[in-house]
Length: 397
Image (cartoon, rainbow, N blue to C red; front, side):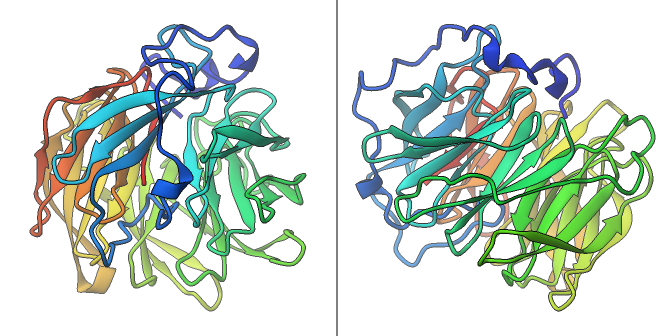
């Protein structure tokens, strides 16, 4: 859910619209990253995975956009980045992917998945070796805004914001997608204050792999499910409720897996949550400050460093990244400061695989900012932000 003239409702139903001209060349006009260059890629953008061997040479970067609005892109933007300097260079576009507003990669690094955010929501699989579209499958709902790959690499999880539902698709050996195996709509509890219905905003797997969790902004609830890895069916096992009107958007786990951090979009707060891996039950703690003051601000996404020492929050409106020290083995967040993001409306943030760089996709300024992450958690802008039409998701591999 995006405010200030950039609401998600504005994009739902846009799949039938006319894509604006992109600032990047069409697919195939320049060589882009291939699967062979990404064998160690990880799909997770929630916790910096950390690498045993630091990558060298240009690394692939994929940027999601909206294709159906003025000034938007024409598909998934292709780029490379230097792992030391953070410098980004554009290298083309994967076309024929409508409104790819969120991206994820298969654990083997050979397939890219994108949501197609519109009234008739879908998810698309792209083989990176030759950029071929492997499949596009219906999510069974409206406005899919998030997806993730189950750690085993056999299931794709997606969240339909417009219809408040979550979907599961099978992934075959080629990385392609089969028909949906389950679809669950969040019918209980009732929508929170100011909401007309459920709005599923995220669907992820817990660090222990035993549960999948869906964050719903409309019902102020995080739902926990068990995923049957044989059938792809979901069984609800728990619900965790925020305070009314909080509008939870994004959940990120601490590396040790016993705590998680929740960004509440509507009331501009965050919360530390305790997690029980045996039952899947999440317990939401007290609301805490984002450090952005009294102005209008909508928290977007959390990241936690791979050593669990620091957390970062993207702030749309304040246009900053909040830094927290993570204490008590993950049980406590201590606000340190906010850092200007050097862009407008940071919709999504992600670490490079080695955790040394942080990328921020700035929707309104159509840029991607890159920061170097120091050992003490400080962030330093690496240079001028990279221009990319309506950048809403940056996925570095």
